[in-house]
Each structure stands twice: as C-alpha cells, then as structure tokens.
Image (cartoon, rainbow, N blue to C red; front, side, top):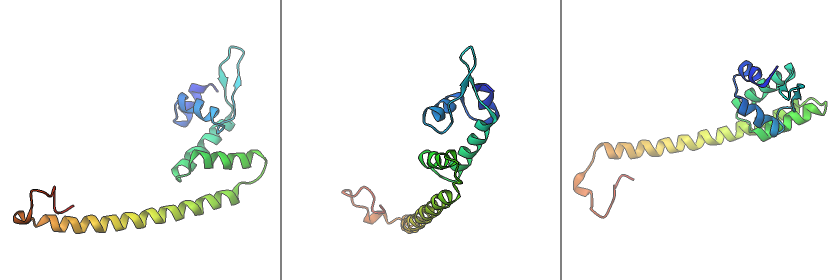
Length: 129
C-alpha cells in the first residue's frame, strides 16, 4: 500500500510515517517504479505496536529498542516488562507528587476563601501565595 493508504489505515499522517521511517521505527518502504513508497502489512502491525507503546507512555526511543530486539529475532518480552516496571515506578512518583501538590493547593484555597483584606499589605502581591 502507498503512504497515503497506510496513513489512512492506521490513523496517522504521511508526515508521521516519514518521520518514523527516518528515525528507524518503521522499516524503509520499498519503492515502485515511479518512486512511490510501497508498504506491506507488516508496517500496519508495527504502527499498531508504536501506538500501543505510546499509549503506555513509552518514549519513541524505548519503542525503537523493543523493535530492535524483535528485529534481531528475539522475543522482547523481558525488555518490555522492564520498561513497564520502570514506567509504573515513574507514574507512582508522579501521582505522589500530584497528591502533595493537591494538598498544598487545597490548603491555600481554604485560606484564600476567607480573605482578611485588613492584613493585605501593599508590599505583598498576595498573602495567600
């Protein structure tokens, strides 16, 4: 299939497909006699994997690593498990940071919801922050 057909079939753009090809995520397409890119069904499967990897929060570099393992003929399962474990640790840390931030903002909001205009000094921008 040509690049426009692949883009339509996978919900991407031709620009994205060219980028993925240039960055090694998508294998270089064969060319027709007239120079058009011609992709196989394997490209659809790779693009689906890339989409799922991005949905899991993996970087394109990490996805490229997984594809490289598979392209060497090895099962990338252990590598994927390691990446997902690291991603979970990162997410847990982000969630903890967000909970702490929420607590701080909630405390500031409570203080700001009962303003004391008499204690608002001109040299302060706002005493609640």
